[in-house]
Length: 238
Image (cartoon, rainbow, N blue to C red):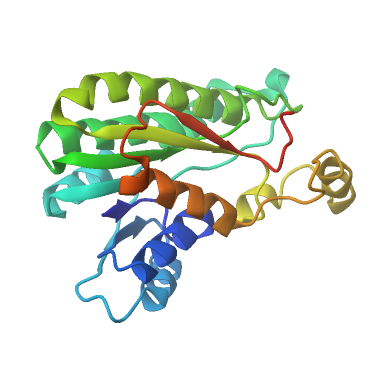
C-alpha cells in the first residue's frame, strides 16, 4: 500500500500503524530526512518497505511515483498543506499554492495510478479531507477548507466510477488534530485552547485517532462502504 504525506502527522502515523498490522508500506513525502525517520519506525518484521522522496506539487514528482510503484491494494492520499489567510488577502498565487498540493496533485496521482492499472481490483482508497469547508468554517481558513471540500467531492465521483472494478473510495474528515499543520499560523496557543473548549471531548485529536479510522476503511471490515466521508472530530460538528 502507498501512503503519501508520510513524512509527518497523520500520514506518518498511518504508515507506521499499517506496518504494525503486517502491511508492506510504500511511503512518500517531500522532506527526505523526516521521511527516513518514518521509514525507520516501520515494522521491521515486514520486509521490503519502500521509500520514495517526491514532491507531489510537481508533475515530475507525481510521474516518479506512478512509474516506480508496484501494483497497490491500498492507497492513502494524505499529502497536504495549510494556509491561514483571510479571503481579502487570498491572492491567486496563494490559491494556486494550496490547491496545487491539496487538490490537483491528489487527483492527478489518483487518476494516473488508476489509468495505469496500478491499483488492484477490490482495493481500498482513502483520501484525507477535513471538516473544514463542509461542516466547519473558521475565519481565515477558506483556502484550506475549499481545497479539502473539493477533494471530498471528487472522492464520491471516484467511488462511483471505480466501483466496476470493486475498488472502494472513501475519505476521513478530521477536526483539529495535533500535527505541525496547526502550529505556526496566525492563531496563538490561547486561541487554540479556547477553540479546543468547543469540542465535547475537550481536546484536539491525536494522529492515531485518525489513523485508526483510515485503517478501518482500508480493511475488509469496511468491505461494503464506499463513497463515505467518515467524520472524526471529537464531537465538534454536533
